[in-house]
Length: 219
Image 1 (spheres, rainbow, N blue to C red):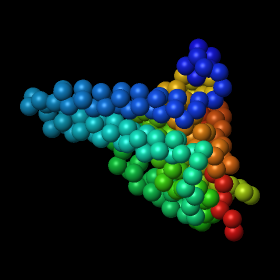
Image 2 (image 1 turned 90 degrees about the horizontal axis):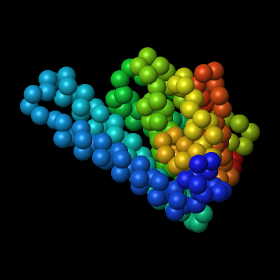
Image 3 (image 1 turned 45 degrees about the vertical axis):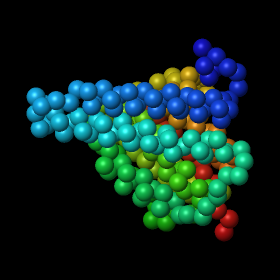
Image 4 (image 1 turned 120 degrees about the horizontal axis):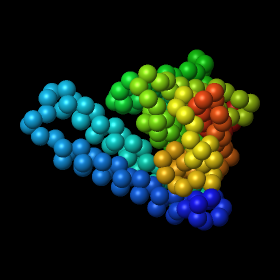
């Protein structure tokens, strides 16, 4: 279908939450499958790999769960903040350091001091994590995911760059079904628009660059 699950126009909060719950359900089912496969015959290495897989799946589900409330409240009573973009970047980097997808390198690049953001830093934190987790899942061992932040005149741009083959559902996320990276893009657009921000996805060589435009706090 050419639009979000056959419906015209951008998805509203209810459609997004329905899709998020479906995605979370799939992640929990994958966790249960991993748990079912655990037994005494596994080697220590196999047990360690299974543990990492369970942890990774749980982290992805947690990021989506944390975004349900911001999606539902995006059009009313949003929570603003005044936290440096540096704090957001460092917080995301600490979480990703513990994420166990093997062979995929994630690097973070930002100037020494980023301006304060005019929106809830927890929301930006989980929006970035959700998109980074998707990028890492799509990447192959040896590929690189880069997370960048740079100040603009009235905003801070957070970008996730990866070399995985760019899928049409990611590039044309506004017309794609609400799942995977397209769902994460739709969530980000829904929330960021309520703060005066936006999201853009571009080709970057053979891969992609996903940009979150977050408004800066007034000086």
